Image (cartoon, rainbow, N blue to C red; front, side, top):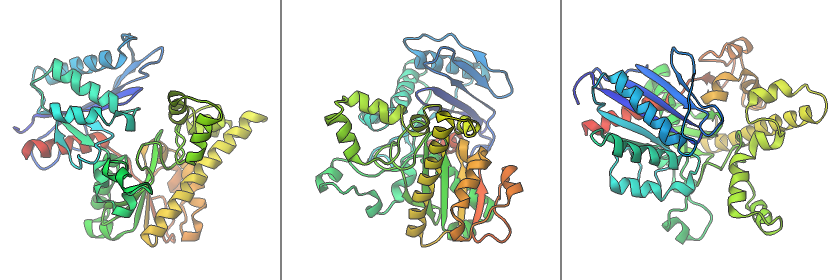
Length: 402
């Protein structure tokens, strides 16, 4: 790879494709800021849009039968225009699930694609779209090397007791285990903490990172490595999310299927798409909408309040378990869409953690500053924007350089 060659990053989901282009000018990592970034949002909706940094969103007329394919081809065409005929050094893909075999980024070939296809049932909101993107690029730009970067890889440091499921040992041998997710986000936060506080301080701190977005999880870090996390075998586990249920008594699933006679597809749709904040509130999966509706009279306001109270309750409950495993808490970091931008929910979560000696600085919290804890707080509390695309670009660079 020569100096200045670009890296294209794709982060494909069921309703959006995020993209970013980094130009590497030497060194061990790409520049922190992308030279070009944006996303196609609203895939599958009546009006998808292309949003690029520094430009107004543009309505797209996509093939309704193949919206992901059509959107990706438009992104590839826009990337070619940005590159001015230059080929990218590689295309890096965020891949949610790597399974037991992939604990580090890897070049994409036929064997890797076959393995990733087999993992689609474990991450149906993301895995099939990343795989489809790789297949499309293989057909449209076979000369572009592709690198898969796995959300599960960061958690390969989890101890055995954190990975095991209490099922017969043969389940472990078949790959049924707790994997953990949001790994690219946690890897970025670990990097950012080392930069902000110094390697020694960051590594010594007992840290919990709260990745709170439409999907949500917590990760306990020791030595800046994952030692426990709330998501497990699938991205349904752990915290209550925008439309996903989080941890759920398996007896409830059996009841839904046996007594209420829901089929497998109906249960999957319920747990992935109609639960969480959306399901409890009956209004929205977006906390901003629910916060605005809390004061409403009648059932809408009541359900908005109940949904948000449960959301905070589940975060506090899971966080307490991670603190117990760490033997205390020195640092709490909020990241992702809700974690970075909702001062109200951060305040509610932290108010329930006062027993740890944690206290917020209200003005700093409202301003979303990097440090939002009060001067006399025994726990350092911060807000750190995550950059999953940058982590993927850095991983691709390392793969290319061997």
